[in-house]
Image 1 (cartoon, one colour):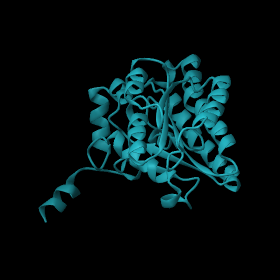
Image 2 (spheres, rainbow, N blue to C red; image 1 turned 30 degrees about the vertical axis):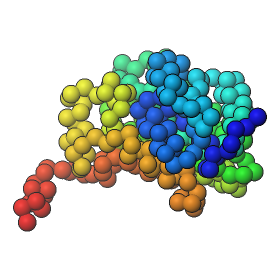
Image 3 (spheres, rainbow, N blue to C red; image 1 turned 180 degrees about the vertical axis):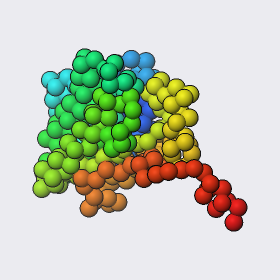
Length: 263
């Protein structure tokens, strides 16, 4: 039996217990969505579950790469909380490893979570959305656009998410389902803090025109824009880089910035 249906329907957020996903959960609740935060079992998900009211929002433990569990869980959530009208695929794993040191097991695991997991969640969300419409937002990365070293597996996975999303956008548009991608640059999340050494951070800072890392909230606000048909109803198949200008930057010596500041 469904509780009172939230004003905007229900959005599923994978990777919802930390980082970008957690910011999407909080921002969606603030905009009167029903929210299901999906993540692996563990302390972060337990902490989140303890502060959700379990009527308009709940936390669900799920490995997004487990097809059987994904199929079962999405159908159950639609039955209990529907209508599901949005999905944000934020679950992902990353490792900085050089090409010659990347083993196939690691490569496959990254693809399994980042690509197959996003595909399974999107497919099952589309299954329950068809007939009434909805929006899917897949979180990729600028590493799926640019050839960032150390990212042979991660970059391949995020590039695949971008192409997969374009195909989904074309196929699902007749069903009233929009599919878009956010490609974050360097964002201050637990995963980034784990893999970005001081040297890596210095490199990023030197290649981002805005000279800073973004916040998870920066991504969350773009996700809400893409979820909301009243604001982005004619937008589908697009990849929006939220990266402080990283993907459009060329040579940056700093001399032009100094000259502009002096005028």
